[in-house]
Structures are given as C-alpha cells and as structure tokens.
Image (cartoon, rainbow, N blue to C red; front, top):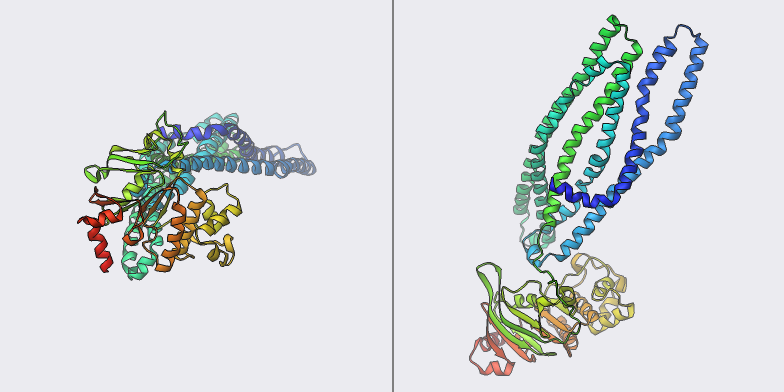
Length: 580
C-alpha cells in the first residue's frame, strides 16, 4: 500500500484534529448505545416490577425520560455538530494541501508532458481523484474507528447480559472478514478503470468545448456526437462492471446482516420460554443487533469506499511521479547580470527519439541585436524559440547565454529575463488589468497604464465597458486578434526583459492591427536582444541578422541585403512573397 504511506505524509500535520474528532465521535456513537439498556430497564424494572404501584412506575418513568431527554437535547447536538465540523474541516484542509502540492508540481512539468496529455484528464485527477481521497480520511481514519468502537462496546454490554446469546449474535462475523478480503482487490482495479474512463470523457469534452467553433464551422455535430458516444459508452461499460461487483458485495453483506437478527430472535425466544431469560433482555439483545450489525455493514461498505479512495490515490500519485524534464543542477546559479548575448553551439534536438527536428545549428547573436528566423513551416523555427527559455533541453550541443550554458542557470531566473509574444497568446478569463499585470504582479496601476500606452493598447482598453477592469472572457474571446496581441505586448513591456522572442506575433492579423503592433514591437525591441519568427518577410528586412532554417538545418545567415545577393532559399522565399 505504497499510495497510503505517501498519502499519510499529508495527513500527519493534522493528527491532533483527527484524534479529537474520533474522541468526540465516540461520545456521539456511545450515547445511542444506552437506548437498549433503557428499554430493558423500562420493560423489566418498571413495567414488569411487581412491587411498584402504577403511580410509582409512572414517577420512575418520568424521571428516567427527563434524564434521557437532557442527554439527547442538551449534550448530543453540540457533540454531533463538532464531530461533523472537525471531520469535514480536517478532510478539506488535507485536500487543500494536496491540490497545492499538485499545482506546484504541474507548474514544474515540461511542455513535453502537456503536449502528450489532455487538459481535461489532468483536471480530473486534480479535482475528481483528489476529492475521492477525502473518503480515506473521513471513513478510513475516523468512521472505521468509531464503528469498531461501537461494535466493541455493544459486544461488551451484550456479554454482561448473556454470554451464550452474545456468541450466537457474533457467530457470523467471520463471514464479514471473508467478504472484505474477497471483494477488495478486484474492486480496486475496477475503480481505477472507471476513474480512467471518466477522465477520458472529461478530457474529450474539454477539448471539444474549446473547439466548438471548429465543430460548428464544419457542421460536425453529428460526427462529434458519435465520437462522444464512444467515450461515454466506454465509461458506461466500466461503470457497469464496477456496479456489478459492488452489487455482489452488497448482496453478500445484506444477506448476512438479515440472517443474524433472525438467529438471535429465535434463540432468545427459546431462552425466554425454556431458560428464564427476561423479556427485557430479549428486546435489548434484538436492539443491540441493530447497533452491532449496522456498524459491520458500514465497515464492509467502508472497504468499498476505501478501495475507491485508494484507486484515486494511485492515480493522483501517478501524476505526482511524472518526472521533470527540466531541472536545475545542484550548482545552478541565478541569471543575475543579463546582457543578452545568445550562442547556439552545434545544437541538435528531437521531440521523439530518432526524429531530429534540429541538426547541428550554430549561430551567435550579440547583445541588442535583432535576429529574424525564417523558413518553410515545420523547419524548426519555433523549436529554436522554445529552446532559448529552456522549455526543452537540447539533445546535443549547447546554448550559451552571456557566457554560460543555459543549463547552468536556475531556470526560473533565466525565464524571468526572457519574454515571448506568440501568434496565439494565452489571455486569461479575467480583467485586462490582471492580464497585463501578469508581466509584473507587483506593478502599480500607473505602470500598467504606461505599458498599455507603449503597446498602443490604452485607447481601446479605455473604450471597453469597464475599462481596465473589463472581464475579457475565456482566452480573451471578447477581444479581437489584434487587441489580444496588444494586451500580450503590454504584458511584455511591463516585464521589461533583456531577451525578446516574437514567434509569428503578427502573422494572423489584418494590416491595420499589424501596423500598430509593429510600431509597438520596434519600440519594445530597442536595446534588447530580439528574436523574430515572421511569416511575412517584408516585416523583418530591418533585422541585424536573418537566419534561414530548412528541415532543421541552418542553411543561410546574413542581412537582408546580403541574402538577396545570394541565389539561395531566402531570396526565393522573398521573391515568391513579393509576387503574391
């Protein structure tokens, strides 16, 4: 049970709260155990008492009921409240800590991990599976002990009344143990299969919701309905398999639970008739059967619940065990004095082994230079951009920034001095102010306004319904493409990095938006080392260097004028674009 050991590390800080909850729970569960004894006393010592008059019987009954009502009305409600409150508070705090830890872990995982996983499946593990583990805390660490306490106390009380009848009452207990052992392992496997199928449904649904405009534009509703039905059917089959096994467990457990009281009633009736057992004792015994076998039933149900929780733990820790592709060396240093010199030294890179994307790429960019990277789609341009901030590590060779291999820097300090503007920048479902301030969370409002003005974004932002506080929807759906890009550029102005990367930042925009953004980019690139991947070559003729990449290899380097004099790929690309 490796998952349980690991889970207990999150539980350990709250052991005092758990013990307190169990102690309060013992009081809560212990109080109802006196009811069968009260019933026995009323039948045998009040109603059946030969030496008491009717008025004395009533007086004794009133006193008894008064004391019992005080216990149940005055003491039991706060005990119930604090037990429920402490149990839920502790469980929720532990889940909070687990999700905090998972989010820290998710932020350290590489882009390679996210490229191979559906967002919906990851979300399912962080939300659904973590929530399922709460049952381990509430059931496994609290309720099980309370049920065992109830069983032990009930058996102890029953033994004081009649040993033989008690032995008959507990004679079926071994069958409960067998049921738990038999059903446990299979149920855990089925639960994992069901959880995985649910995660796949969530992943599929999340992806389709994000691409609903594509589904509508291609009239794919019927096709996508069939695809969703496949995912949903798979989950249904796994859920039915799980339900069948659960039903078998319930059938066995409930049969045992129903047989046991019948055995006790028959034996107790015989003992009343033949052996002088009091009617009060018989009634009390039958009442205690409910107190005895209800906790036993819950224990078996708890084994099912715990199996589901442990299966969810397994899935959570599978995510935790995902290794980091990008890690700091033990002796990594901060990128403390950034200048912006970048050197690629025989860099090769593959996303998948045996499929090279870059091969022996070498170039040098001096501080403050603007370099454009051009070439056909799929040639490796964006990969070069991703290697500079170390989103991936090179397969061979090295990337040197300001005299050090990027792997010798602390990765967060390196990325703190690099900013990217992409073709499709992520804009979060929040205010414009929030999205710009992501460039520097400590920035003042005035600094945000200044960054927006520098990005030619201030005017359109102030014309929004709530200005800078306007919520712009998921992925900035309420903004045009050009407006989203200007918000992203304002974010970079606020960050004020030493190295800039523009990866086709204007390729999908109209001419007016492109013109405004180009002005912002020129201003932003001043005195900074700047990398530009551009689709329209006319926008990068001013670059200090132009790198031409073809099928992962650097085939040409030079200024626009130098490359136009050559009869190489750059001139061919430029002439084709001029003709179109």
